[in-house]
Image 1: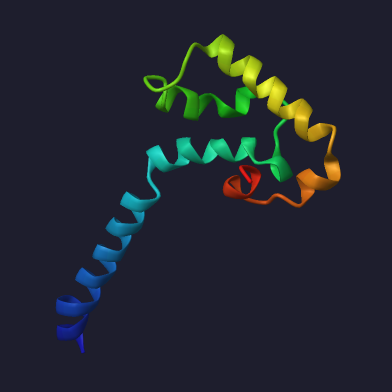
Image 2 (image 1 turned 135 degrees about the vertical axis):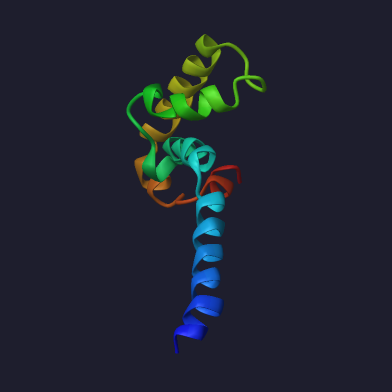
Amino acid sequence: MSYYRINLYIPLFDGLCTHLNNRYGPTQKKALSLMGLIPAFISDGVEILQPAIHLYSVLLPSEHEISSEFTIWKHKWWQQPKQAAQIPTATASLQ
């Protein structure tokens, strides 16, 4: 029994742990802050988006523009709360 534990179970478990750490690492946690843009879960302030803003800063305009665009986005969905509640994913909000 210990033969199988040493030669099969431990390497399999180690590989699984490594895979999960790579898939859900610090970069993915930063990108997850973008959920604050989804209308059903929209955040109160742009501060919750800061990890993703820093992660993608090369691709984005200035932080002032991002703050302004977020304010416009937030007001759009706060004026339509019933529709916002029906949009649980980012792709659904683009339709």
